Length: 173
Length: 184
Image 1: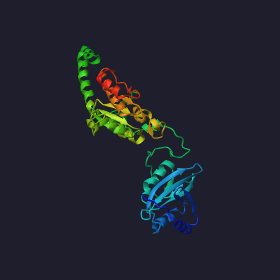
Image 2: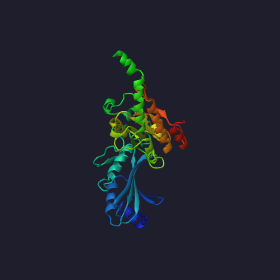
Image 3: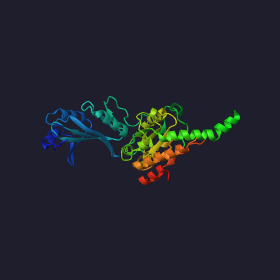
Image 4: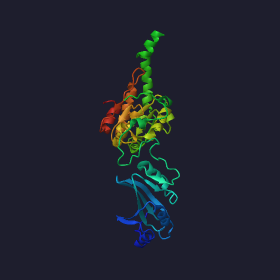
């Protein structure tokens, strides 16, 4: 994937359209800190403008900073070969954010992952349920305040009995 | 029938021991295996199967279905969602069936120790016969484990229960050769 740095003119163009955006730069990534109310409008703008043309959502993930939580979007344009990063901050008490599945379909499973591991709720997602953990998992394991422990009773819990599998009731240890 | 039961079935005798010997010999000589490579140990298991180590010569032939397998090698961490799958595979195997747990994850959880989603050892799910420790064990370790399993089967009798064994650390080719020759 050949990547050219996005031109400053384009960044200025986005900033002019959305004045509330804060701009950052880390390594070769240009980052916009986005308010969650602006996210959908910004997403549509980035994808539909011909000289921006961010048709591809490379990655979407959640981050927990204890004070707040963040959803990170990595965008790439195959046509223009430039990339951009968006960060949306939400509070821990109200981790609700608009789903971008309507703009980039690939966000479907990524948002389910962020929901499963961080408990971030994506409003407007058609099928927002856990993707890695089972439905009866208590809490969201990647949150920093979730205490790491091994719950054997939960792990070995099964709807079938040992006899149905043809297994002995007690295993030799 | 009381005397016959006592003489021929509940206690070791010449008939049962001869039968045991014959069955054990045939079982240990053709351990068809279902290789359940869940993680990186699977790569070492494949290395043990191909030409350099070649465990086909011990009669350990990989099978694609549990219906034809006598031995299941659990190689990797067992996560919560894998537990029912592994139980079904084990249940589909024909008796007598044997289990080798390969690697630190299948032994105790390994680097996933105290993880929220990994079962702390294959012995919580299956009746393991031989543990092969290491992260990950070299093909020598797996070969040694198979030889140990053959020993387990050789001693197996309808009168005695099976006990799990552990492969020693840092097994070398020389040890395997010695064990295969019966010198150790």
